[in-house]
Length: 355
Image (tube, rainbow, N blue to C red; front, side, top):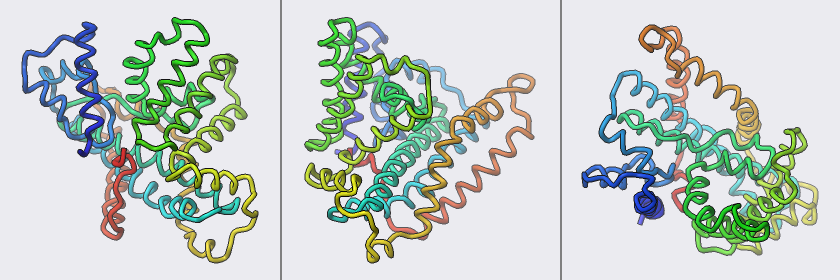
């Protein structure tokens, strides 16, 4: 059933938190039902926990500013999905549908999918946050600029944060976490990541993806990699590791993943066949460059938006009219362009619907 994994995760977290006395059991059935069936995040997250929402069921507030901020988050998320992710999708699909792709196509398709998945999934999370805010609920952010990470450990603190926290609190820590011997800690990391891979689907590709990330997490812990200073080379290496992982995550089977890796190594040729090149649109390449730029400037843009537009600055905590005009115009333009794009394209579901 649609969203069954998120129903399940929410229910498990409630039961375990009550058992651990991390959350008080609710005596109101409707609060519990509302928590389990809170629709904005059911299909693709973020994964909610009752203890983070319990007080909001009783003390939720509704204000014009909250509703406007929710609309802004929704518009930004819709723009990420429709204007960026959907434009990159044809290039990624072409690369993964081509048997034994050449090096240029394999690398272009791999990068396209890497960006498509981020903007598609973070776009949905932003839309869920926006819908929740319109109803007075404040959800935790699910992404924190993951593609600037300098290690895989940092990447999992920034990517799908609600899933990372869930796996940590309900799998890694109960298994002993890092309070056990070094060897057992590495086994725990591998176990958690393999199970995290299987959560995405019953396919060997997800098992390999989990082993890949679990192995890097264990290696970084053993080498103390995450404690080293941030450098451009470390960020580049982390991006490469994540990109290679996304290849097997996207491939329908191990055989195709191996063929794709062979293409990235240049074993399938170094030139782009004419019939393939004709299928790559200029729009896809331009949007890919734009998406890379967005990922590069996103940390600075987030800081500006949060500090200037979403932190109360006026008397009584109100935002000045001049402070709300610019984001309102920008998000309105993004929403209008997204609707126009939706009207001209075919149905394109969110990628995470399949998990």
